[in-house]
Amino acid sequence: MSRSGERGKLSIVLVPEGSQDTRSFAISYRALGALAGGVSILALALTVMAGSWWYLAARASRVSELEREVEDMARDRARVQALVQRLETIEDQYLTIRNMFGSAQMEELSGVWLPPASPGRRGDGNERPTTGASRPSSWPLSQRGFVTQELYDGNEGDHPGLDIAVASDSYIRASGGGTIVDVGEDAVYGRYVVIDHGEGTTTLYGHASATFVRLGQDVRERQVIALSGSTGRSTAPHLHFELLLDGEPADPLTFVEQPG
Image (cartoon, rainbow, N blue to C red; front, side, top):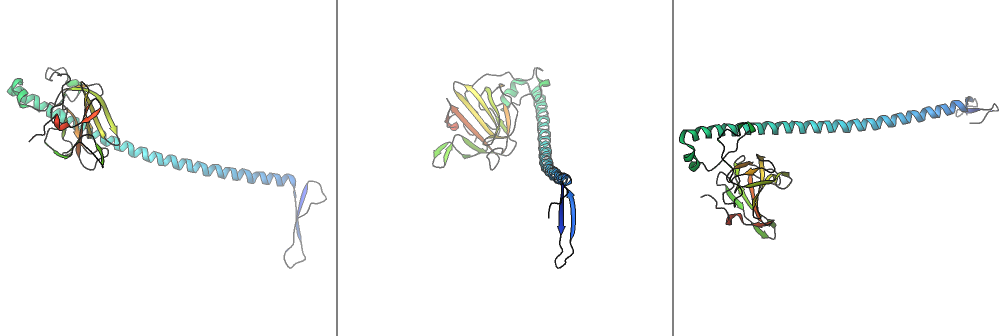
């Protein structure tokens, strides 16, 4: 390869192996620069295309995840709506029976109060009045269940409450009257409800499959506040029931008695 005498051009001489014949090509520096620029632009375009492909692939993957989340939310919403309809049916049956036997007699027969299932049912004269804060004293389930773990401190770690094995979607009841000070979901307790009963006493109900109360709501003793489940750090359906005195765990069995 050599530079020709003509200014601004580059000569390329090709000598085939074993032959004395040669071939030469002349290319201007301007054309050579244009060729180099074209190659650079092509490389840049390929790089941009590759980056765009990866970006679009990541976005497509995220869209699939969002679609799955929307499907899960739709199923959860349908389940909650079915539960609300179930509660409305039970409430209608309860009101019918109470009207048949009289409200005073039904007050003695009924140990579980189901709150109105929708705001439109309030104010019809059939709901029970709230009773205010009261010391936790009632079993937190509408059935006996089976205590699988009690309050203890040991080498395996602290367990600040009772674990009560019970079938999924069993009624969870407020152990006493009070105010809902926390309701939500986390990785440990799953869906949970916390009630302030006054005088430094609170109760926590964890691993619920669904909750029926809102923050700041007043509830009465034995009111259904949630359904049992296995959300959060749980291996089987059960209720985790905690009782705190001034923020310190206390044994719930010293306050409530398990049904026989």
